[in-house]
Structures are given as C-alpha cells and as structure tokens.
Length: 300
Image: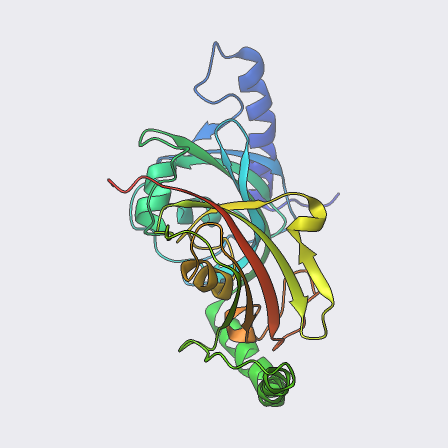
C-alpha cells in the first residue's frame, strides 16, 4: 500500500471535514470554510502531490483569481513572485504558505487589508472597508531562492544575445514606420489617434478600456474588441496589467485612443508570456482606447 505524506493526509481530512461541517453545522460564517489562526478562512478544493509548503523568500508560481464575496471575478492570471514575510494578521502570504505543489484552495481575506496594506493601493469602489474578498489559488511550482538565482543566471546568460537583437529590431521598426515622437524615459512610444477629454486617471480609479495587442509584424495576439468584452481593472493595482500598459493608461485621458510601442522590458520581459504566445525579449504594440474612468475611493 502506498504511504501518504502526513501533510497530504491532513489536507484530505480537511476536505472531508469541510463537507461534514456543511452537513451538520447550524450555519457557519462561510459555508465549507475553515478559520485559520492567522485571520483568514480557507477551503481546499484539490490536494496535490507536493510534499513541502513554501518557505518565506521562496519563489512560487500560482494560478490566481481575485473575486468579490459573491464570486464575481475582477482579476485572473498566472503569477511568479517571491513569497515575502507577512506584514500583518490576515496577510495573503499566510494563504500561499499552506499550499504544496498541486494544491488548489479558496481563501477569504479582508479586501481593505489586501489593497491598502499588501499592494499599497486604494480600495476599489465596489468594496467597502468591511468587505471581504475571495482568493482562488493553485500552486504550480515552488522554487527555493538558491535554485531561483541559479536558474535566472543561467537563463540570462543564454538569452543575452536576444536582448541586443531586440534593440535592433525595435529601432528598425521605428525608422521604417517613420515614427518621430520621442520615447518616454522607460522607452515607451505613444501616438495619439483620437484625443480625449481632460479627465486623467489616478491610483484607485477603475478604468474601462478596449485594447489590441500586436507584434511588430502586425499580427494580433489579443483583442478585447474581437471578444466584444472591454477590460476593467483598478489602476495602480499590482498584477493586473503589464508595466507598459499601466504607464500608457497613465498618459491618457478619458475617451482617448492611442497606439503604444513598448520594449519587452515594459511588456512580457525576458521570460515571455505565461501562455507561451509571446516569446522572451519581444517588443509589442498595444492600441488602447480609454473608454471610462470611474473615480475610486481616495479616503483610505
């Protein structure tokens, strides 16, 4: 008979306990969820084959979704980041700390603490200060800091030539398209196609945009217009859009439409997109229309 790791057995028991709680309890605060000593609620949906939880300062790869307590998703994506020491009780770092590779779980945390303390942003207008939010996470990979450093050094050494090639590629495009505007200090080029009004976005505002992402050869890799689904997010919030799009929107006014050319450093970097569609060191073009700015909560 196969021997199960103690942690895995414990999580499997939790799955059954959660079901039992739903069946026999009067009315738990959050049905099916267990309460942690670190001020969050959790529910395992899938138990992976991992043996160890991450240590603080390890790097983790997580599929993650942020939702309102009514299960409305306002962000979804794959992220790779360093698991940092928690700053307070209820910090999201505590949530990731209990997952092993392959685990999938839902967590309930304070929305106000997440936005104002963890990512140093304003609380979005669709939350109030007493609201909670749901974080759905699946742990894909755990890399200790020594291995991460080694992988990064090996990768950067291997792709060093690609960075130089990107600069040449981008310069040829700028010259070939006769683009005369000067780039920003970060290397972002902007060409306004339709002016907007005088309303500019501020941190904590909710923005609604249409965007189309293209390679320099004109081939599209994403388009909200083709999906007929404008993208909405809280400006100034981490892990929502690539750096270049964040910078681009910060240069626009409501109603404006513009084209932005950005080096990979502002886009998908030296690792490319998580989907594999955009290769490493690839400059891209984003056509963005800032449809609406909804002023956020600035009183935090």
